[in-house]
Length: 139
Image (cartoon, rainbow, N blue to C red; front, side, top):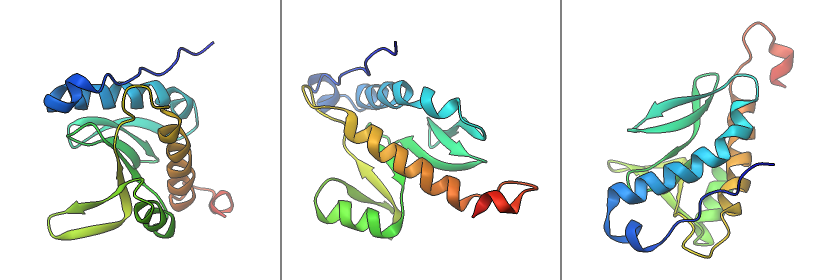
């Protein structure tokens, strides 16, 4: 039986960015096992945190404030951000169409929102990333 994901405390993460990032990384790590057992999924460093990638292309990592950063189809990302469930990721002056930032669940909130969107991000990047030597698997 898999242990329950850690629940953010809400208090320490609000005032200490390092604690927020650690808490976010702990939550992502608790969800990562499912993906790391899949073919072609690896855990790699991205902007100072351990993120998840399919065939070298990232689909999830933790941002500096402990939020989950995901790559999703542009229409799904736009819809989620319209509903105030997330924020679009911005790199300098450029808004990234397919990257969103989702705040950590606060104490008492269910972390399943991260799990569901992580599954969507994995499926999306898996479809985008060619399988070496077998183009039929990419359709």
